[in-house]
Image (cartoon, rainbow, N blue to C red; front, side, top):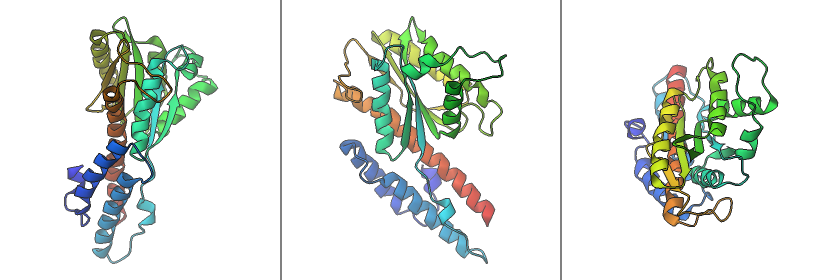
Length: 263
């Protein structure tokens, strides 16, 4: 973030940005999309400065930030599982930062056929997942820990992303990826979280600094987006916030590069 702000005429906005993030984290509210507004203010200030240095004017409207899209992938064969509910809490954290979210839960993942690269035809469900991730600015993956590894249901969905190999952003390149694991015990959760991060690296994604491992023996999710342990809820929300914040920062970098090219 600091690298993006350095040298901007809107530098004075940076302390407010940090303060606003803190306020949003405490209130869990999206009444005002302040992070997005601050990035827009920074970018507009930069665009205005660059425009003054050129003989022509640069349109600022085309450089307004859109709300980033964060796609959640995860769950089990059981509807409304603890894994899917934990993932929903993480997505709520992304929404608190102004992101749009979309969830592919266990029921959807269960409808996906086994990914077979030798078969060229794809089902509607496979295409829906591929197109959503192609559009996504960040991804959050939630998996249960099964015998020390990622579940086959979630791994099959990730294998389906092989269809993105020839994209401008192949696989998960240029996207922050939040990692959430649920397991019956701490040992399994930690091991699977490490494994999931390795998979994300193999897909060229950027794992968020914070990953959440939830002990299902101690933590319950009473509804689709509530958690019995406030500390665990905050940890999950942190994953979502970091994914959304990275998406904003990465989009800012690309927008500024486009602005410099337009001079």
